[in-house]
Length: 477
Image 1 (cartoon, helix red, strand yellow):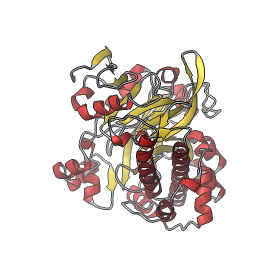
Image 2 (cartoon, helix red, strand yellow):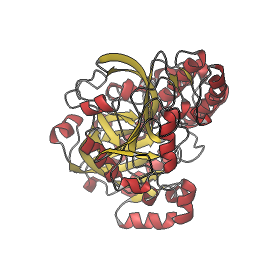
Image 3 (tube, one colour):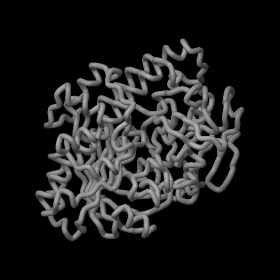
């Protein structure tokens, strides 16, 4: 382990105040011994940098999928005082509200005799790849509604049902959205991309529930062993990327204006209550709403293909939940015995609210919020549930995925996409992508073990295992 790091428990480590100059709070991260082998020193430096930011509360946190990112480490969580703290795009990421949703079906694997044809039809229905363009053409008014109303907009347009809204984080809409802070360039990127998957680590998977760990929670979430499910992982596309880019330029100047001292310019920020901070928050929330609507439209496209090809009803394909893992939220948390309003940044981290929290859907409240942790292509994905431990220790947060160990460029140099396609095919996993390079850069060997990452948060109680899902067919962007 890196010099200066203090071990606090079997899965818990600390960067004490003084690890670098200017830290207001310790850095706290969660790893197994196995995962320390892939820990990047740069990611720990970023964790320490976050601890120097104004108004940070208790700890700068990182989950077991920690790796180097822009500003904050990916896997990073930080909560800031509402009145004295800051908001930072580096704590959210460029792909605002990149997130995951899980859909159940009444199918089992024996019903997928046409798996190749189903995958081909899904590939045609959901545009993939860099700059993918949708067959939908939003008007300016529709785009405005999409940014304001999120998933509600999509359902109102006929792309889903009311239960979908109930089973989205924030009910698929951040009320603080202000499209006035979304630039003309960002809008022009968003108009042609609604209902598209994009590229990178985004995917659409046909999966099967392979193992149930918690019968009560699985039953509550409507998940059964042997059931075919669909998982979608994507975000706000070019619109969100442009919102981040635009506001970073403004906030870089705000750092000097408000006399904020930072060890890394990638942490550019502004006070939450400042005009610049409010503008970024409003634009970010608008992009988050776009992402929820985007995943909702993709859900409609999936339902349309499966109902046509598998003879099942549209409403038989049910949304378990949709969670974000790149977002900043104004939330209330109990801190030092008092309920306080804070801004929680989750950058490559997932909300994991426990039983009884008012933000958990009413039909799930006795077990806690569903937490969806996708694997890398060809590896296990997991359904978990939120816990009181997370509420008390990590502002209701847990991991978001496996976490990279190779950059995309490194993966493409070391791994042949064709070989991965063939290897997965022999294991019964069909892969479809625009080109073999997209497969290589997202190969399983480019990521940490999803099962190892999930075991850490399960053993710590930051979220608890409910079910394991295995891929049957994968569409990569």
